[in-house]
Image (cartoon, rainbow, N blue to C red):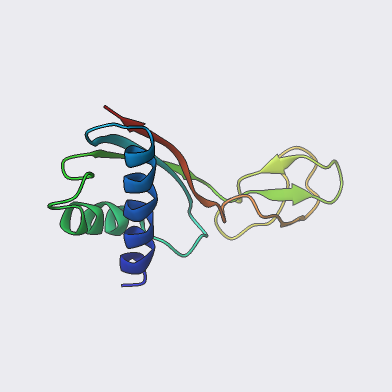
Length: 113
């Protein structure tokens, strides 16, 4: 449910951009959502369709790039995706530590026409 207010803000930002560009409508919005961001992409897309009705965003495509979380190896410094039940680096075997990769949530671009 917390996707609702953030989706409202995305629509406001997109409408403002559209108006400032002198365009008729928003054609596409690209979002980047990390798997550990706390937001569910499908929920954002659903709310976007509902809230966007009757706005400059009505009918716009919502393209979402999902970012998988990564750990940073304490031994060799490489970034890697964690395997189930393991924190071990697949290269050197040392433990990985958390990073901010996978916590992203931002509006990458807005296409208007």
